[in-house]
Image 1 (cartoon, rainbow, N blue to C red):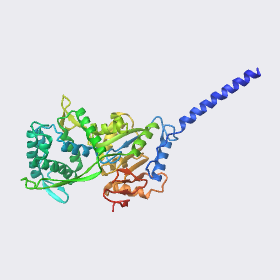
Image 2 (cartoon, helix red, strand yellow):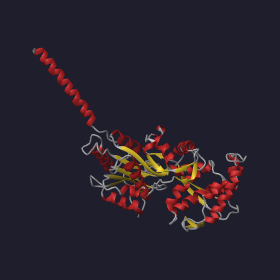
Image 3 (cartoon, rainbow, N blue to C red):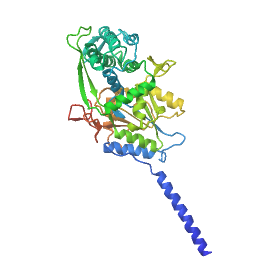
Image 4 (cartoon, rainbow, N blue to C red):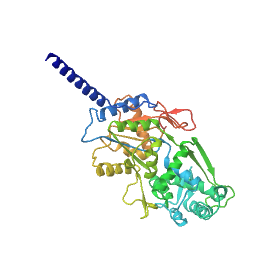
Length: 422
């Protein structure tokens, strides 16, 4: 009996120890890697996950937490939609008819007949006529549309050289002109994908992203050809090349998911384009397509994209991001509670970062901006010594596209680290 009792006791203890060990393994939340987070930002992010993750003291299984992240300049360095635009332009990857393209160019928008660009006023009528003339020539002559000229031949023409300057300049002008702004410009640039199917856009986006991830981070200035008779005259446009993956955001997304915190992307770019960058395994973010909330376009019965916005869907910038979260997550998924956390970089994210009263924390990637994002960047600086801040500010080096372990940022072309917009 004594021997049997001892054996049973030892067996019970082994089972108990085994169960304790399993419980200990479960309750230890995985923490994010520090990488290039600033020390204070890392501590705040780590504590947020420990407290609110599936085994944290604040976790509520009836209200599982979720986060809402901007994409461009937040989860990745630079802008995927703009990268696709420049790829589309340089390779003339268009499927619009001549009439469809001309229909996108209005001579008056909200009563405004000119756009502002680099302190210059440019007549919409003049630049539109130039672009229509250019596109008609390209459409009729380029072998990738309905002509016979090779890419090399078409790129040597003044129409091509004028077109690739004035189209992105017009888009930038829309976004920068009061009374028109990004609410008009952001959807408009997506209409240039008219004629594609969504799967074709995804393939195009993959090509553009892959190219730009390997491209040098630089500024390129294009000038329309001299001596070429146009209505708007000779103009120039400067744009940024390159995209970069942010390991800090890849790891943070993975850590959220490991701790039972669902990740949603809320972007002002086109949903299929963001789905490629955020979802393909080769890019390392692994966010499922159904968790991407972004701009959407109308399609015809054959699935071909039309040059118009999807009926009934919000434009996902500024307050539209809040409305999209309410519509898709709170109403559609019956998660009526606020996001735990959000991240952004610009005025377009301001409402998403500030509008939810129960949000615990918001991350701002520091682009040394003024405006609304500048206001909460300043608040983040004021809260740096607070163990439970509402906002945190993370710096980066724009010359490398990488985070740096401070709140200050080194802007492109500079070596000086700056904290706030002056």
